[in-house]
Amino acid sequence: MYDVQYASRSFVLSEVVHEYGPSVHILSNPVSLTLLARVCSPKTRQPVLNDVIGELYRQLVVEVINNEFDLASAEVETRMADVLRKDGQDPAKAVIEANLLDATIKAVTVDIARAGILPSQVCYRTLNQVLDPDVVRQDHLIVSRAVDASDRVVGARISGEKIGGPVDGRMMLFPDPMGATGSSLSTAIQYYKDTFGGKPRKLITLNLIVTPQFLKRILSDHPEVTVYALRLDRGMSHADVLAERLGARWDEETGLNEHGYIIPGGGGFGELMNNSWI
Image (cartoon, rainbow, N blue to C red; front, side, top):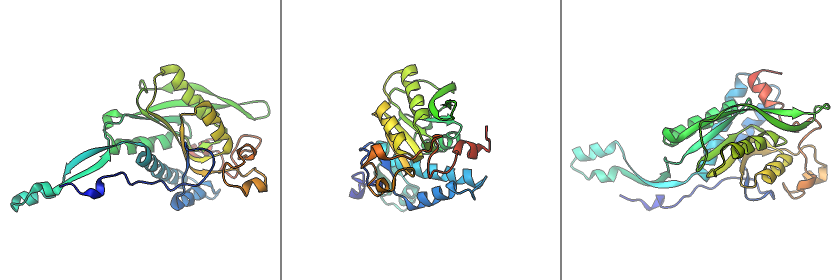
């Protein structure tokens, strides 16, 4: 019994207006922003910090799935069908006919250790809940910042990996909390291109906070990438730049200090999430 209310996809992102281009989504979500502000406060410690980060990624990956993953027509018989049969009524009235997520979509989430371990695990769990688990995979990369003698970030290096196979035709998610310089994520994405080739269905980064420099680096190195973030930080910019719409003076925007940390930011999430300061 088809109900016309399910005929079209009605999901619409709530996002900030900006001038970084259509492949950047900075979400406008008061609950997420409130939780993210709590995570960034020095008053927030373990275990609350990781609990809240996990919740933020649950919310973020749901937004990504809603907006990016394909739908397919489906029919699901509910428990009430048996009741209708017993009452001599048409059990077809208890069948949900709707456009639901296409459970056959192949997806892989990439754990970029160490800040990305928990976020990727949350994404992996959510993907398994809404897709066929047989087509969902989690990969692991160990990516480290490379710094110069002045402790400035000059790049990133991969020192280990556990990758489960090819990525051709897959939705690829890269959940990494802090999009600062973009070097780590760019290196991770390039590693897949160099190692496996092929063409993923989509490349999507999921970040809690990004900077203008991060967006410029990622979109320059990998223009096919789509970025989802809860917040953009450009706190080192001049006051007149901060008064303009996001991206209006992109080249003058900066969210990094001299050591490559995000300002206002929230500190080194890799250290905070693991209580490890080396």
